[in-house]
Image (cartoon, rainbow, N blue to C red):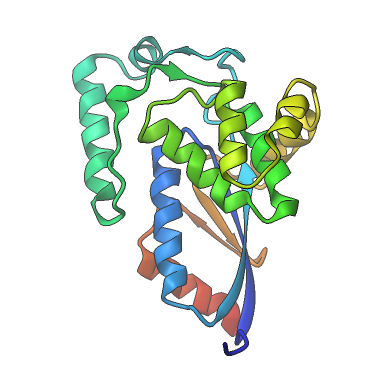
Length: 215
């Protein structure tokens, strides 16, 4: 195998209950597939669309009605996301989601996966659990299953989730993103130099990759 021609670090500020972040993840993968000779490290950084949701989560339908209004508007928003995802292969099943979780614990799990090199697998599993299977990704048992599928020790993760470990660290990362002016996700940061907001097309991301590497 030929050695990589260049290296690149991409930080993705994201929340695992954000459908546009799931779309953005797939589009980033498509962009990177167009530059296979580059050694890329992707770091998943935390963001919470709604940190006020209680730790046990809340009923999804009630939450959406309070946030967006009537069911007709909610359906239209879901249809818009499905249409945007047509190029990604994601078949969103919004109707399967029963709980809107607080994602702080999910972000702790993602953080713990980073030094082991398993972040991408864990993030993909959490997105899939929530948007494709309608699972409650605030539930510790669900998070432990995601951890195991991503290559982490489930017993260790279960024990760590029962503590306060890294809650403040995750909150501080979220606060740092806010101080940087990041108010919406996904947000992609290329080598700490260029920022791209939104689930941009793969071609747009490739352009930024090339611009970053060109100096």
